[in-house]
Length: 182
Image 1 (cartoon, rainbow, N blue to C red):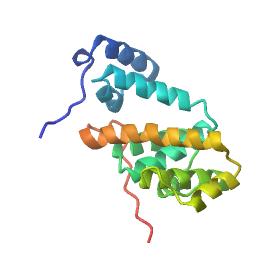
Image 2 (cartoon, rainbow, N blue to C red; image 1 turned 90 degrees about the vertical axis):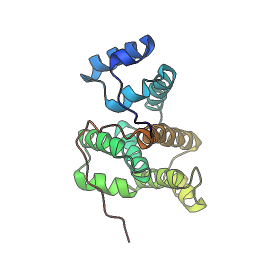
Image 3 (cartoon, one colour; image 1 turned 135 degrees about the horizontal axis):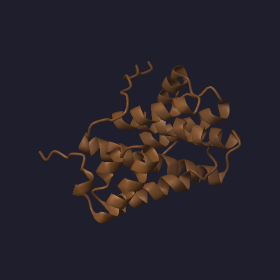
């Protein structure tokens, strides 16, 4: 079995090196997951462009973190769970709320409907029950919000899959597994 390692700056193309430099300046380091995606400058640029684009949709930064947490939990991505738990705390979620979000629950009814739909999309390969979709629209979301939600699920699923296939070291504080609901 081939072991995928996190590349150093010198192991990627000049195009990826430029992105590494920009991200390192902005973040103070190059996260392992982004570095690994950097084996392909095309993929790294596409992923970063997608993340940037969806950040201008209808969901706030805090709401995006909630969606990223539930999707990463569904996809069993330890890397993204660690990174987005840290970011969710910075956005104001408590540890209790973060565990709830990972299980698909939000205390805010409107956000709860979005988290539930994101969870259904991730669990069912794009499918969701009519009841979950209806609850999303009843909470005041519209078709644009639905497209933004699908985009958020898709962006995070990409990084979840990168981790699933590489198992690169997690360079964020690890998070504990949660107990499944009975």
